[in-house]
Length: 151
Image (cartoon, rainbow, N blue to C red; front, side):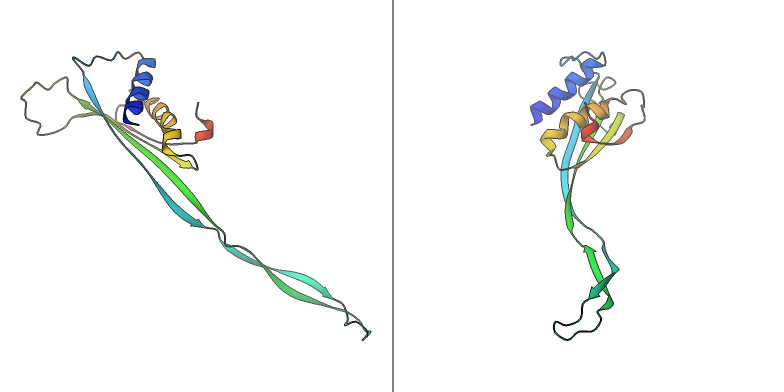
């Protein structure tokens, strides 16, 4: 998946007019991604319902109304969260042999997507959604994407 990931990033960057130059890069791109799952418990509610109780068979008489309670909910669901963080690291102002005391980040972005699709399915959406903000928001970007709205 790593090769596909960087291929997607390269395609998105080229859509924005950047040219890939592996011999003399101006910045490096570091990517971290992952996914997690959590169980979400639905709330339980109880509501009163009026129920008619007919008289016992053969006894005659009149039936009665009684209040009974209906319980609803209590189901659980699994929520899958996929996340991606992209760092653009300055290498233009570094020379071979320079000590790296401090990494200079040109831009950092983070995208999160929730739903049932696997990370391999949503990775293109995360990349395109996240790089939409580069370089317009040079300080960084943090977005939550809806996969069904992603093109």
